[in-house]
Length: 207
Image 1 (cartoon, rainbow, N blue to C red):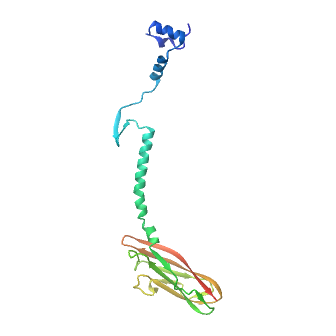
Image 2: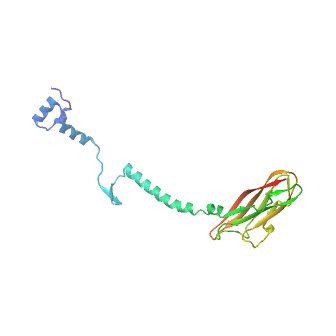
Image 3: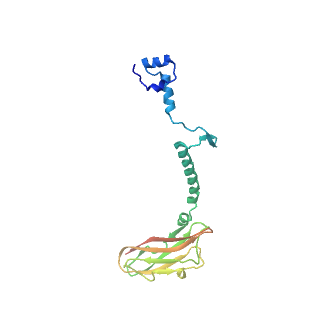
């Protein structure tokens, strides 16, 4: 007779089972038992309980991913308040640069002036009275500036909460002109002082 499995597979079995196997092949129950014996055994002991759920001693891929997601969510929760409290972003919106008092229209040969006022928006922010402060007015050749570079000593009113800077010019030729003010100063609150470097355009129409 021909056997589908090795002879030792049937060692110790009853003759009728051996004969049945020889005639019809191994029974489904025998095949299932053989497959179960060949499978690697997985530890089932519980090592610890986390959040009410029992995990096996060896962490599965799903468990590792879950823990990574929990840690990432916790890190994100800690990062959001830090970003919201960024003093640099808050300082950049804590003031305006106002040039509306500048001469907007002038005739050729007539004098005019360029004006810049730093206006804090909130009472908790102010221009630091001792920190470095520089204003540079720039203009095309059609506008002859009297004094382009200004500092703290050139502020119109040293005690004002809104520092104002002015420089005179004479219009040399007709046409639309574009001057600008380059500003470098510190805006401060009770918690931080943040350096600001801004440039603002000042249009002048010379007729």
